[in-house]
Amino acid sequence: MKPYLLSIGAGLLVGVIYALMNVRSPAPPAIALLGLLGMLLGEQAVPIAKRLLTKAPVSAYLKTPECAGQVLGPQAVRKDPEGQA
Image (cartoon, rainbow, N blue to C red; front, side):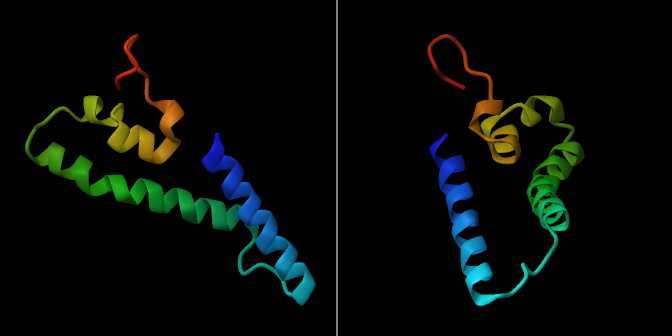
């Protein structure tokens, strides 16, 4: 939860600085968020393509911290009872 609070805090700080400088943000929020989503998904394209070429299981990789955790955050990765991913 702390990274999310830090992220929103940094965003609010930048928004205040933009307002004080009387400038608009460089991109509309929806476009900026879609760009960030594209970057996150693009980071996973190469590992997925490698697994497809080597016929390794892709669905298992999608649930790992390296993929799901990177794209959706650590809360997206299911943990077993011992707390291990």
